[in-house]
Each structure stands twice: as C-alpha cells, then as structure tokens.
Image (cartoon, rainbow, N blue to C red; front, top):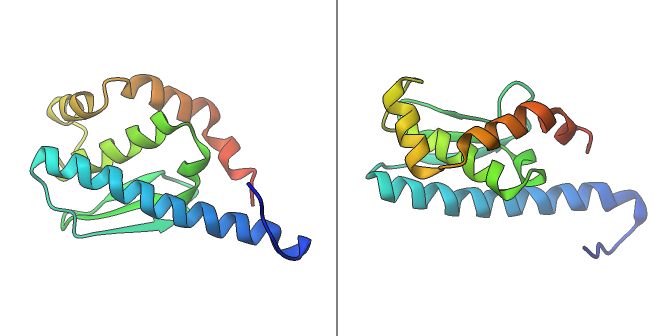
Length: 125
C-alpha cells in the first residue's frame, strides 16, 4: 500500500482507506446474503466499536466495526452473515444458527478466530 503525503498523516489516511474499503466490502457481502435470504437491509453503518463486531436492529439497520477489514476475509464474511441472519431471526436460537451455517459453513472457526485474536484488531489506532 503506497500512501502519499506528509508522514504525520499516514495513519489517518490508511484508516480512512480501510474504512472506505470496509464500507464497500461489507455492503457487497451484506447485500448478497440479504438477497439469498429474501431480506431487506434498511441501512449499513460503520463504527469503531469496542464491545461488538456488528449489530442488527429490528427495522433492518446493520452496524459493523470497520476494524473487521483487519481480520481474515472469512471472519468478515462470518460477521456479515451473522448480522444479516438476524434480519430473519432476531435471536440466537437453533433456527438462527442454521441460517448462519447455511450462509457461512465455517462460522465456528471464524467465531473462534475472533475470540482468540479479535482484541489484536484494536492495536491499530
């Protein structure tokens, strides 16, 4: 990644680029999952959350941490599939986990990766 400009501004430029990429990539993945599940996404927002990687409101608003762009692609895919699955099941029931498994067969491994390594994604300011 080549970042032009003053060295003092490089961290900010990289962070802005990561956020823009996250917005594009998360929207693309979320729309694909929603279409497959016959769901409608009202809005997608990015945040710099500490307590959760994503969330879903009952009216179809999805929110994600931009830091997911620092994780392996499979982890990003899992979190997006997880939140979109909430558009069908607003709980963590067996039915919900069946939807997640349908959309992301490796969800258990991705979830374990987040538990083991997720805190490291906050090392980048």
